[in-house]
Amino acid sequence: MKNPMTDKAKEILKAHGVQPSIQRIKILEFLLTQRIHPSADEIYRALASELPTLSKTTVYNTIESFLKAGILKPVRIDSRELRVDAFTEPHAHFRCLNCGRVYDIEFEMVNLVGKHTKEGHLVESEELYLEGICSDCQKKRM
Amino acid sequence: MKNPMTDKAKEILKAHGVQPSIQRIKILEFLLTQRIHPSADEIYRALASELPTLSKTTVYNTIESFLKAGILKPVRIDSRELRVDAFTEPHAHFRCLNCGRVYDIEFEMVNLVGKHTKEGHLVESEELYLEGICSDCQKKRM
DNA sequence: ATTACTGCAAATACTTTGCATACCG
DNA sequence: CGGTATGCAAAGTATTTGCAGTAAT
Image (cartoon, rainbow over all chains, first blue to last red; front, top):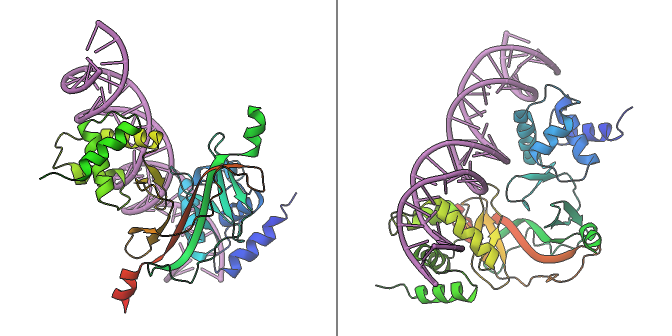
């Protein structure tokens, strides 16, 4: 059985000038399939059985090259570790204070990118982070 | 010479039910005076000469109790380390990709706090993070 | 006296670096 | 062959924990 995202992952890698090694394809495939904003460790654990020789170093190397190539965006809503997100549409992130999951939030961003703030700073990227209790945990608490 | 923020720091601590030890007063005083969103290490280094016995553990303990008491807010714009902010007015943060400084940005927040997102998540806090080139670094590059 | 706070040292968590091996054009 | 990628081991950085000493009520 073949993951339908494999070809898409390859295409994205080529389009961004990144060599499509098996590790990089699998990592990007995972990010495209499981939209969970994983940490390096989550990526590693998820793929360890499929790629038995995979190392954390390669995961970190891959994340770095993806970030440089613009394939990923960093998600810093969790203070401990760096999470990453392959979703390209502008959106916000919500972290549940109860279960820790990070959700995508449909949200019209202010879009200051390319503009200057009142203070004269040139904006290149913007991120909106929300925290609270997710709908799942609200139900469970009732 | 006495820092005029000392009394304000004491008041804030009392108002939030936190015992005003000398370490806590000095740390809050520093946060109120130097609006630089410092990391634990920056706080430690800034106060080490004044409080020779100060330990990193106490800085971390103090940050934690301040966060719990609602005196501080976490600023996660820097992926490496946790920065904190004592400023209570709603505002955004801007990080310069060139010099690394974190600035306060005057900005009307969307204010979703207390409301539910379209997805049904209950929002308790929101943070807007911007990145780019600060006005200082723009001038220097010219 | 009891409870809370401080701070040293050790442990842990996350990430980076050095380097030898393996892969690819 | 020559450059790039991989991955093990070790180092580095940020934070947390265990615990004994200290201060405060």
